[in-house]
Amino acid sequence: MRWKTRLTDLLGCKYPIMQGGLSGIGTWEFAAAVSEAGAEGCLTAACSRTPDRLREDIRKLRNATNNPFAVNITIGMCPHIDEMLEVCIEEKVHCIETAVFNPEKYVRRIKDSGAVWIHKAATIDHIRRAEAMGADAVVLVGLDGYGFKNIRQLPTFTAIAWARRQIRVPLVAAGGVGDSRTMLAAMMAGADGVYIGSGLMATKECPISEKIKENMVKATPDHPDLIRELVAPPKPEDYREIMELRDKMPFEKWIPALEKVMLKHHDWKDVDPMWEMAEKLKDDRAADAVTSLGARPKGPFSFSCGYIDRVVTVKEFIENMVRGAEEIMEELAREWQLGRPAG
Image 1: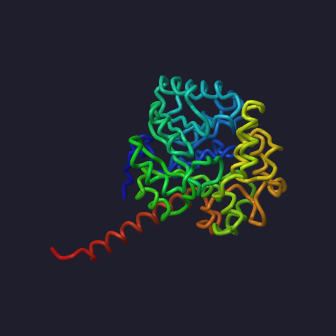
Image 2: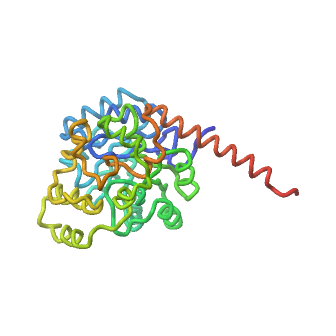
Image 3: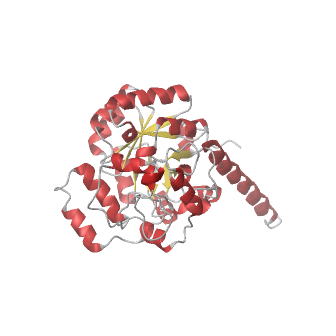
């Protein structure tokens, strides 16, 4: 079937699937594999470290695929943001994605460049503000996902269903989406497409430790430590302390420290900039040092671990998700047709 949603129309991709920013592992090679599979690949600017390297990576990505891709600039987690953004504009990147913090400082430059601007946030209030600023689409991350959290964040499907009542621009669901059923569920709840981070990490092309991929296969979403890490509120005393440090720490350290507080990690005071922390994900030996709560298999992944039973290629992952969704829709269409009353 042909997948046509407001998101595919906006981005020009075959399927309404976006690759997550994935902190320091969204390399151009990984993004190219995702774009070639028909989804929207995403090059994370922080992976490039410098503006010159980002320019090289954008050009390499263009040479590797004719399909659309985005560049992610996560505020507070990307070095040299102003210069990185300028490179994106000069290279005429079709889609620029901002995330985590208030993007107001950068909006006019993005809009004036003519690029599609997508903002990702964890609360409905934040995506409403982005829409008011002129965002062409928004990504709403629910509690089911890993990464940056907010004390007003809702579970993914509650968030999407509620946001659909309030948001007019294309809405993308993130947080625990990792297979055909969760993709369709998110779209039935009101999303125009889905945004996948953890699920795509368990692919052969993803540049993370094989040990973390193995842990994703072993993990289950009902592990008490994973539930606490993703869903429970932060310790009140830690939250108060990190908020008091807002103007006393370098911003690029305060942001990842806040993320660790929200994930209930005990080592939040000993934090490096996100682009340096992400290097730990790439080496099998360093992967043992990745913070996770309790005894659950280590790794920064979401509840979507419940849908990962083996490591496959990006192409296989996307094709399996799309084919499975199409089969489910065909099956339901037959069942509903049979179940209709005569006349």
